[in-house]
Image (tube, helix red, strand yellow):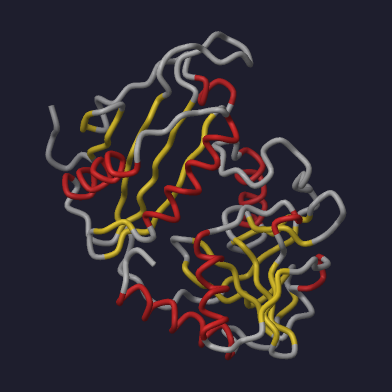
Length: 286
């Protein structure tokens, strides 16, 4: 039974009250982090960039050897969750795990666990500038999970807690070569001499959907942009910098490890953020 005031989730084929939703204590996602997910921004009651997010979910699932349902059926489940919770602006998360399995690394032979959940977000608008810190723990750009959006988020939890303790809102990771990689749930952009730069896939970063849209917008706006290897010092020495994600959109960086940037947001950040909001207003599946 679904109770008023409770959130409703979609679990393995049906809508269910959050307090009645149950997964097995033997679920491989819970036991080993064996799973993938996608987080989408919901605007005007619709999941944004559905096609791109579904394609990335499929890539991540394939990388772990997991099967996902067809796009149309999964999107219907997402819309049912959004409607059941009466949401207009929201965060939507799709989680797929290896399902009930033995107590170990070996995956079981049952159907994967699939969860679709959503929660309200404030209406979209310019995000205030954010301070970030750098952390010493490297991303492994050569690891089996590099480039996959998995639920193995322990490193992100630890790094973000470190940022919060320092009074910052995000943490930036290097890779094993000491190069700039990404944030705990964001991609990183710097602007120097009017040129927009962001780490390439080879750095080990997750290729964000918003990251791709920003690069496309830069091309339309005739902003010179490069996917290029960057040192960890690139953010602190930039003219301006920002992070991006589906829920943050574009958020200017005001300081790195306590060192203030010249301006936040800068002119390129502002131009791209305004263009991004216009794109959202015009098309929910670019």
